[in-house]
Length: 151
Image 1 (cartoon, one colour):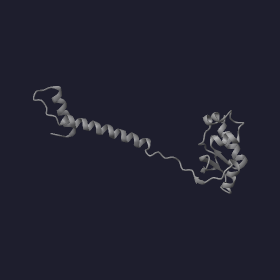
Image 2 (cartoon, helix red, strand yellow):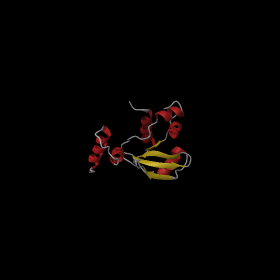
Image 3 (cartoon, one colour):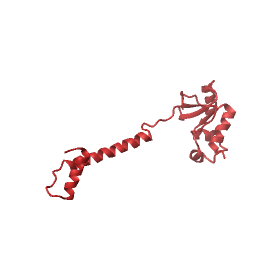
Image 4 (spheres, one colour):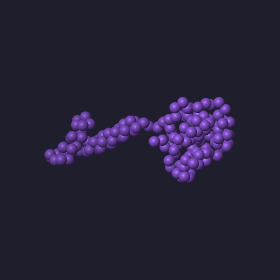
């Protein structure tokens, strides 16, 4: 079953060749699809895959940055002004948000951090003077020295 925001997007593309993907604008354009602005905000999906469209980021003075799907870029500013009611100040191609650190890098960093902490703890133990008699502490210190390659 198609959700309402997808239904909205396909109908906008069919009618005007572009879909403005912001819940505030969508609620104004298609009040029949949502019970109110809160219902629209909760159920609205901005990031969708609409085949045959270009994904853009458009900045409006009132609405801010808004995603737009457009079949054609011809007269896009004028068409957006007709639909939204104000001329856009900037139109740019959509770029995916790339996380600064990938999940793999984050996992690697966490593993490295844990290894550094483990080695620091071993160094702390290995630098202690072992007791002369055989006990748990002496074996722990000698074991730490062996793991670190100390004589």
